[in-house]
Length: 328
Image 1 (cartoon, rainbow, N blue to C red):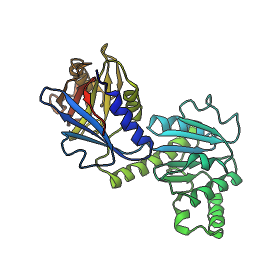
Image 2 (cartoon, helix red, strand yellow):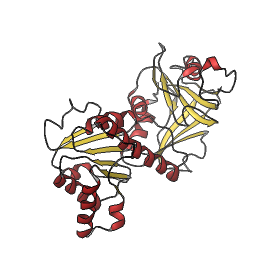
Image 3 (tube, helix red, strand yellow):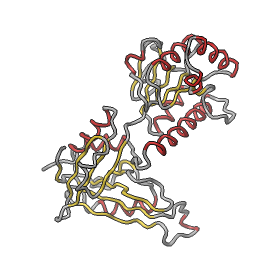
Image 4 (cartoon, rainbow, N blue to C red):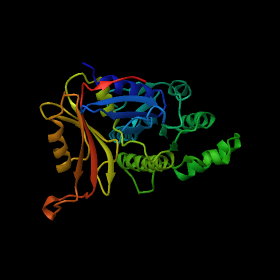
């Protein structure tokens, strides 16, 4: 018996290394499937595939400072799919109890933490420390290394103006300094820590979506928690994956949902009647190693009572685990 776990373990291994990856599926004549993962967009690897899912590495939200804004920012950031890292040099602030949703919590000085963080071009960085000196330590390190996808600093307009002058006097280019979002966050009139966190995250999401449109229009609508669950899953289940969409749909291609024998699910392909319809079909495939493609049409029988906000069509691949797999 071969488990789907191996393929998703390979997929996650590639993504954790910071590389993009593609998950390929090929249907066989007996109603089963072959599945494999490869780094990047390898046309040679996928030449015989029926379906391809392209994944970008998971984006980190690095929060430098563990104060009053950091707590809601870490919470909301994790819910929006970021892998959250929080850094503070005070043990009482850099704790798992304070940041239960964070993937990583570092108790380290702001000068030395960057050796451990290893900033990449896909990272989103918020500088929200407790003071000017620590902000400057962080900004100098960010401007001296790999430029992240987003970097921003919290502060008043007067403080921001002073920091711009200091950085430029130290030899940092005007263009590089202008890439720092200062003051951080969209100007929505935020006052409370939670509102400020929302404004910061909204600006990051705006940047994230701009990046995804320019870098890859085909990148999967990935929920890394679902991918990680599949990489560890050993019991019988089925997986529903949105292959393609037309019109207005709740999720894009790549969205996944795991269905267990008792009807329990993990993840979502959009909720509502469409998801329930897919779940009922998927229960027939749990643990069978077989696969099918189901078309879900949300344009039919839409009435005011249905309270449906989407009216598109989704093609959904349904796979039972224990499928035949092979590694590249």
